[in-house]
Length: 412
Image (tube, rainbow, N blue to C red; front, side, top):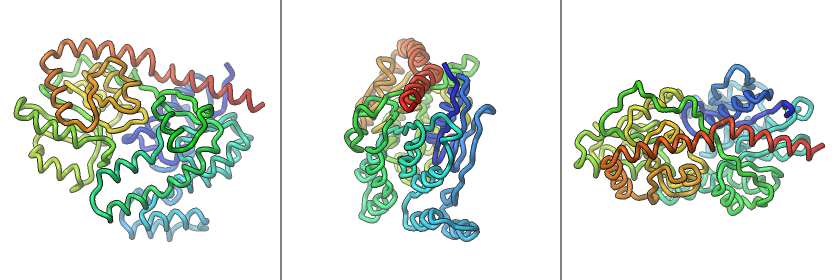
């Protein structure tokens, strides 16, 4: 198959938290390993790419590197030759919005991709600039899931009119998403559940959506027999203090389980806001000595945390794909996961599935696994084989390659 020059656009690509930065890093690496020449155009925070993938930095004003008003003002005032996008970025941020998708898309729309690349992939900016880009070069927009779902859950679990107004302000970019998505000729999404939701919430024609799962790095996420497990250690991932991840339900389950298993503890891959909702709940449930947080870990370090743990829990209320699900399974650790959205598409029969928002269900599943641990270890070993066969990045990159070839041939 012909080797292509591929540009991947990503308005932000945090390397240690959140699925999108992981996605950009892994996809670019996998495509380059197939022989393609890949360049990533990213806003901050930037991904950690391998040496064969080129990175182009597009920082904008980088206002979300700080939440201090004076620091943000200083960034804005120091910028020379300000454009309309700079003013837009500053003032929308000032009033509680998130402008990066729109301004990043505008900056991308003036780049001459047509004469320098064969194909462009945008990672969910869904910005007006993408409409311009697809007019000149074969193009695909990746939509992991409609972000309006995040907004709906935050509204559902928030209290007070001020908090709700702040949520509406933050998600003001959703109007742009609703306008842009139906005009995109090729959408890629990682699950059939997300495809259904994209049709429903973004009014995208089903024929314009291809389902290609995200991949799992099964070379890094693997069992580590040289690492000893800690007794009664649970592990979960929560990238932020957001209701969508369902961390509250795992914490409430832990509160129940501590009376049954006096040595039980929970490791959370992620970082809650200091003094925020999660911190307060941990104190309320008297779990300060049982819950620890691990932040800014490399993939190898995360895999080691799985190796030290007995059970992984994914208590999300919704996942467009869910990297922690596949990563835990690749590490051969018994998994409890919510039977919601895309998660059962990943787990098949190799996890203990529970209903969402069910602390009692989590606690019961933990007891069930500890009662017959060898049985669930066998299920976990078969789960790793399932992930390797269906979700390794080599398999996924080949699916991207086929779609890219199809779109390029159709464009000729």
